Image 1 (cartoon, one colour):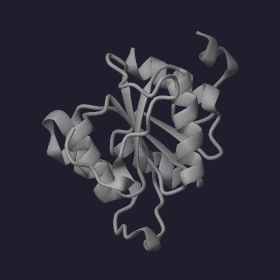
Image 2 (tube, helix red, strand yellow; image 1 turned 120 degrees about the vertical axis):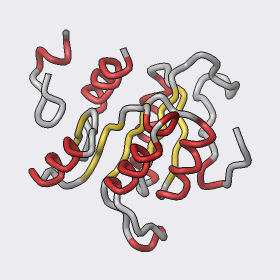
Image 3 (cartoon, rainbow, N blue to C red; image 1 turned 90 degrees about the vertical axis):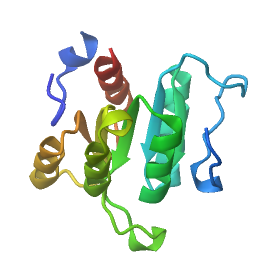
Length: 162
């Protein structure tokens, strides 16, 4: 399995007071809390990407929370304790974010303990070798270029969380 490049076809066979920006998205089934489900945090400034991934992940049985910037992501990591984070690399200056996804991930890892124990999947619109190399250097579990093949993403998430 190659998590930092194109996947081969055979690979895919085998709590706190949160602001409006960082509220968990309700489950698609009945709106009740998802007890016992694995929790995934999506961090992306593009609401279309967040909603598409949220719907796909919820339909696959995951609990999903989301953030659109670094401050909300940090807060959610502290309050929600996700099992996995899907993290965009690029954030425009207008979202008030001076950090890119790699700096956010370095902060996660620097915290250690509860905040550094989860795997991170990097997503980006840029498929540059520099981004792939940097993702591997900071300890990303996988790297996906947008538009994301959600079926491959789901296979990767299952493998990582297994």
